[in-house]
Structure formats: C-alpha cells, structure tokens
Length: 535
Image: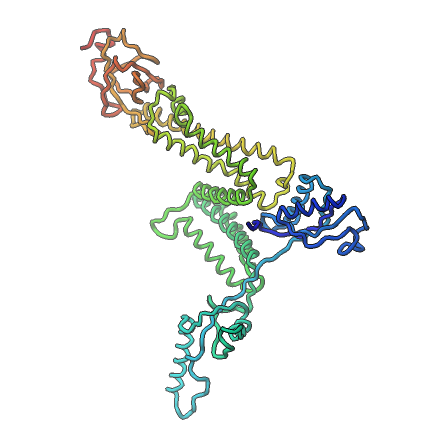
C-alpha cells in the first residue's frame, strides 16, 4: 500500500559509524518510505570541498515524507522526524541540510475542441450585393459563435494550456489510429474566456489564500453580529470597528488571490462574499430570516474547528496513537452502557434528589438514550484533541516528535477530556433536578428526564397517622406530592414544602392522580392528622 503524506523534503543526513550502521540507516529509511536519492562518503561527491573528509561518516540525500501543512516550519518538521529516527534507532545521525520540495501544480486553462466547418466563408461580400447580404453574413457568424459556445460542434477532445498552445495541441497529429492533423478545428475556453493579463496561483498556494480569506471574512461576520446584538452604545462601536478592520484584512488577502493581475475582479468577489455573509448573519436576506446570535456562531465555529482538528489528527495516527486515543472513548461507551446501577446520568439525577439509582425504575431504552447523551458530551470534549491535531498539522515546535513535553501534555489533555465530560454530565443532571425542584415549588408541571416522569399525585393514607411508616418527613394529604413512581413496595415522593424526598410503603397509602400541583385533594386531612380514624 502506498504511504500517505502531505509534504516532501530533501534532507542531507550524515550517519556516523561503521558499515553496519549505514546499512541499518538505509533499512530505517526504507521502512518509513523515505527514498534514498544518493549517498557518498563524507567529503566526496556532493560534499567535496564543503565538508572535511571522514571515512567513518557517510552522507545520504533522503526524501523525507511527512504529514502537515506547507509553511515556514515544514523543513524543521522534516528535520525533527530524522532526529526522532536517530533516537529510536540508536544511530549517530545528523541532519546537515533540509530543503522543502515544492511540487505545487500549475492551474492551466481548460479548452474544448470544436469544428469550424459551420462558419460562414471568410471571403468578403462584393459591394454590389448590398447591405442585406452583409447583415445575413454577420448574423450567420454570430449564430456560429453562439452555437460554438453552447458546445454544439464539440469533438469531445479536451486540451489544457494557453490559447496558442491549446490550438496547436488540438491540431497536433497523434500516434496511429487517431485523428490526423486538422486545420478546420478550433478551441474555446471551458469556463468563460482566457484573460491573458491574469496569472493564477498554483493549486495549493491558491487554496491557502482562500482559507485565509475565509478566516478574515468569518471574523468580520462574528464582530458584525456582536455589534448588531448590542444595538448601540460604545460596545457596538468597538465591535463595528473590529469588523471593519477584519474586512480590510480580507480585502488585502483577497486582492492577492492571483499571482498577478485580476485585482479588480478579486476585490469585487470579496465584496460580494462579504455582503452575502453579512446579509445572512444579520437577517437581511429576507423578511422572515432571523439574525444569528454570537452563541450560534461560536458553537458553529467550535464544531467546524473540532471536525477539522480531529480529522487532521486521526489521518496521521499510528497504531499506538489509535490505541491511546480510541481506547478511552471505547471505555467510556462500555462504562456508560453497562454500569451496574443504570446509566451515569440517571445515577447523578437520583443522587441529587436524595434517591438511590436502584429506586428509579427506568426502562432500558431510556438508559441507552441517556448513555448516548453522555457520549454526545464527547463532541465538546474533543475540542482539546482537535486543537492538538491542528497544532501538529501546522508543525508547532513543542509538539515535535520525541519532545519531552508530549507525555505530560497528553496526560493533561486526557484528564481535561475526562474532567469536561464529568462536569457536563453533572451539570446535565443538576439542571434537570433544579428544574424539577422549581416546578415543585411553583406547583407547575415538572419536566421529564430520560424516562423519569414526575407526576402530581394525591396521597391518601389507608392507616392511622400513628401507624404510617414514612421516611423523610411528615405527610399532609390535603395537597398533592410529586410522585416518582414505585420501587418494589415503596412509593417515592417529593415534598415541595421541605424540598426533601418521602418514602412510603405501598400497602399503607392509596395514590390518586391530581389535576395539577395547585389542586386540593379531597381526603379529610384534618381528621386524619388529629388522629381520628378515616374509613
């Protein structure tokens, strides 16, 4: 299988030692898919007159292939990988020079080949024929040009290059079995027409400029949304000025989308793109559109950042890194699905209410959904690994292979991931508990939580007050309680007056649904509380 890589660098590597060390180094290069271009003894061939002769050293010209972006640190990143190889292979190896191999592809104009036999003859129309014949010939020529642009006379051949190159390539004779040299064919640009004064950038270089332009435009849009959100005042002016500065930055980058020429076209395209982004973000595209909020933009940016960063990270993982990163995720899945007391979120929810996880009888499907919710928190927790992936892609120095800080940074990142998931899980359960307590205090309809549906219930004791076995306080049957269902032979209630749980035996009470939290139960509570038996 072909080794995957993004960049190539030509490194002059010096290996010191004996012949077996040189053979080991060549094997290490081959194992990593780094071709050896040439090799010679130190002080000979390419290093003659440059380095002092040393029979115990040998120079290798190696093509180092690596993942990552093309920037000013790419050569250093290639050298770091050779230095890492020296440490792992226990060889005395030095990178004496490293040059980036730039094989960016030129963007040639695409042309379609078509016939020219449909065009009117080029000979001039005699003068006595009159104006009408000249008009008919002119209309025929215009129609021929129009039909050519529509592709009605294409031969199916495609060529690339400048206009003169494309025409000569189209009329060039090919080997036997193909069309002979033709002069009755011409070419047309596949998209628009060729502008000779515009020199486009190469493919990767153009893509890098487009990414920078998008970053400036998105930053401008975010500042404009925040300024619009404030609706006036000095804060709105500050954010508006920032948006204008980011727009100027976008114009500066956008005006350089072409290597030369095309500045007016570039400025026009950038202005249109900025106007469309602002119209969509500020809700100006239509009367029904709502403006974006800064939170929505921040979440969208974080989502895109996470997706890109995680993809950049996993595409260059080795087997060890897969085990190091994927194993904790699989562990989280297994633990959240098979935890003995139900799902983690249900356990946190029950504990915050004063119940045990076993007392909340939750169907299995809801436990699975709660586990899926717990796993969704990993999408936010992956923000940190995404930052790691982007930092590795742009060759940040402190993430170089073999760097001593890699291990503590990895530990900190894993701890932050686990801690963030734990905090999000606790907050999710606590928010649900707070909502239930607020609903109980206000006597409103309580919200459900993954299969746990509290309901307002009238509690009618079937025994005297003295023999009623209640845990957690006293029961006042005149008002309804929140019921969390039955667990075994116990009724789980929530007392809105004291914000504490109540547990009653099923055989000592009768449960009746209440109309709402403000309803009054029909049970003769005064007689029962006074110790008078109630039939």
